[in-house]
Length: 325
Image (cartoon, rainbow, N blue to C red; front, side, top):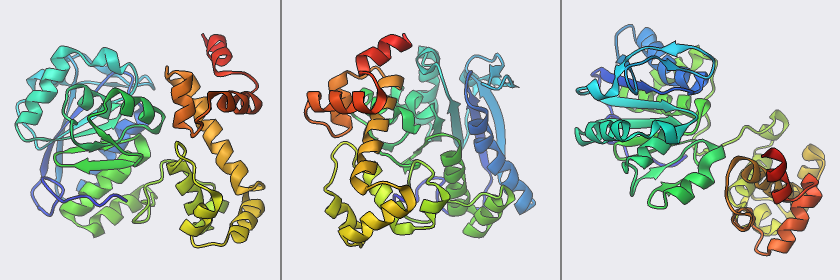
């Protein structure tokens, strides 16, 4: 896990946090719950209010979640002050990024408030210019487009990041990790463990920031899991397989045997499959040019990428997009 500097609200302090939660239309219900329920559980387990929270929406009208639930609250423009602002967003981010909303975020930031973006929330913080020069992450499906759109932000493939007074997380489960980190650094590790236990949620081991969940059979083989994680982190610049083996402390032959035994394929085939699955996601979920998709997945020659993509997915990126349109 990235080593976070304990500043602001992320350091020991027994005082309760006055928290505002900005909920936007079309946000994910799980992301919303991941922001709120750890605070509720912390209050219950501590038998005293450690978090006091109030809901806000973009304009004072109820925010409709993707599940159909509605959250009522005052307009964010009416928020006077708070210790922590959680921005929970999901889809239609450009529509949400109105001048009024971005101005409210900047005003609240100028007051010294810690602001956390959840799921699509980091996009809005970046649009407001608040993440310039900061380390941040967002939902893993949007990482490449986020990094391209906001080059002044140090975008990381981490589950969550804390950078000065800003925190960002990519989706529901990473938000729980972020909230447990806040509880642990501010109110103590034992309370964070009890809160995680209340949800039967096992936080990631220290040092792990993987974005995706490995199958159980892989999680039971730490070196295999580390090899896959290292591959995932280097999709744009693939490493030689012997270097992957050395990174996890195995011989090339031992690594090949583990891949065959647990995944039924060679390390080289698994690496290529990961790159082409990522290429399919970029082709489907972003508007990146084909050449940029090729480079993002480690193909320096467009013709090589085109052949590999068509062989894996049955059609070219252009045909795939035309069919989807």
